[in-house]
Amino acid sequence: MKKHFAIFLFTVLAVGLCVPRVFAQASGTVKGTCKDSTGAPVVDGIIVYANLDNGQKYTLKTNKKGEYFSLGLSPGSYLVTLYKNADDQKAGKELFHFTKFQVTLDENTLDFDLKKEQENTAKGQGLTPEQLKAMQEQQAKAQKENNTVKALNDKLNAAKTAADAGDYETAIAAMNEATQMDATRDLIWFKLGDYNRMSATKQTDPAEKQKRLDSAVEAYQKAVDIKKSATNDKDPNAAKNLAAYYNNLAEAYAKAGKVDDAVKTYAQAAQIDPSNAGQYYFNTGAVLTNAGKVDDAIAAFDKVIAADPNRAEAYYWKGVNLIGKATLQGDKMIAPPGTAECFQKYLELQPTGTYADPAKQMLATIGASVETGFGKKKPPKK
Image 1: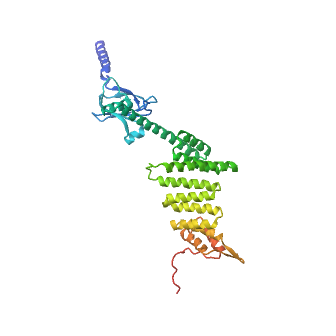
Image 2: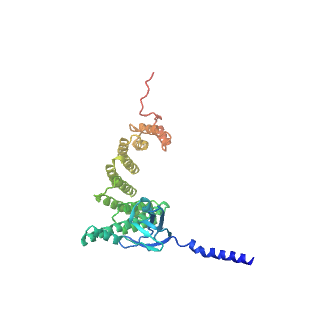
Image 3: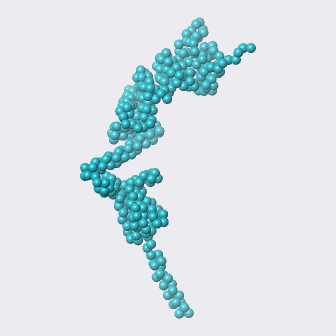
């Protein structure tokens, strides 16, 4: 019995001693540091090790020092690709790659030094030291531009979040900081104008309200000037954006009581963006109506109707201004010709619209009937 136990124990020990052989190291480690073309670390970069033998992929991420490390890569030949971030990885926009990097069972080091690689590439292309320097300066400039755009977008997003919550003070502060970072961006000035204009309506102090509107006008004007001076602007929506700048500038003028400036600026928007001229003329009509300039308002709404015959509100507000020219003959109100037709056309286009009841009341005031078939031929009398 003892002999059998001894044999069994020897067998167990033998198996135990074999365990390290079974689980011996069958994979390697990889590590490295990633630097961009300016020598700065690539933070939160993505490194993909793709095994060229079996297609297996390992995705690693750099830390704040641009370093990466991983255990457990099987030996083999790898395609190793560096991406600036996860979004660039999805878009397939790589920074650099190495082909056929051999991973062994030992520790494997692979550094990405884009500045050095670009210098090597330049040497291979036969560039002179002056040409190499020019290329590096161009790359540094591009990197600086990318960093600036990212920082400005962060400010824009922070300002929008604050403004959406009604916190215009924080939004204005963020945009002012953005103008200090780069004063050549029209969008930054445009949004600064927006937040000043919107914040003005919350002010109870007339002087402060006027100050905010003046600031809005100044910011919008800078946006306009920058946009107009962009001779190489390849944005297909450049004209529409410039017209939008003029539109909001005109609104700021209007809120500040500068009616003539507002009308002139809306006209500029309509000229730049004819496809949306109807809206700019409508805004003009609204400003003139509020200013009590009846004849000019009627002319503006006529332009709206010419640009968009189905714009119901234009007929209603033209009718309202025509009512303003009505006269009294005894107890009867006599409205100018075309007044009833304006309200009738509105009701034809918007029988249950916002102004349907007021339009009917206006018709009753001038003794006209509601005809929602205005503009259609009436059947002949039998």
